[in-house]
Amino acid sequence: MICKQLSIFVENKTGKLAHVTGMIADLGVNIHALSIADTTDFGILRVIVDNAEEVADELRGSMMTVSIGDVICIDLENRPGGLTEALKVLYSGGIAVEYVYAFSSHTSDDLSRVVLRVDNTEKADAMLSEHGFN
Image (cartoon, rainbow, N blue to C red; front, side, top):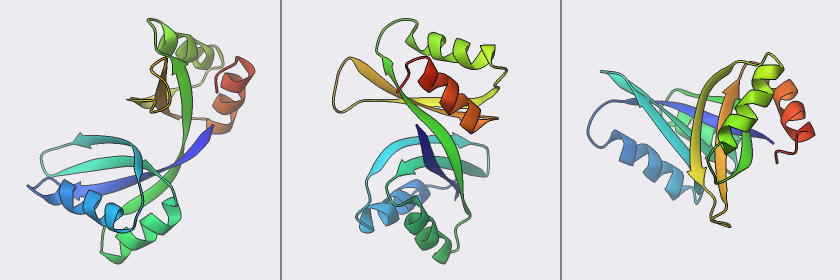
């Protein structure tokens, strides 16, 4: 399934991450998935939330740099090789994976949820669906 992901540039200083996540919480919006990659001066906080456009507008109104992009969100069996099977489907279709992060399912211990940023979102979504990935 194609999902909207926010990428938020966050200054790499104490309290900045709490400030951003607090702003999202103050909007009454739940963060479903989160990843952060940092450098010396800043980090890129990637989040999956409901109402991505609304959250992005609010953050931009506070002078934050925010972009919205499409990612693939899939459920995988929580077992050895589950991720590898999905990645092989993408590889066989010539799709490059830019990054991946995962989170646990709140509905089942048997599933993991994975977020994939790929170079061809629509093709990847179709291929994964065709091979039984939800």
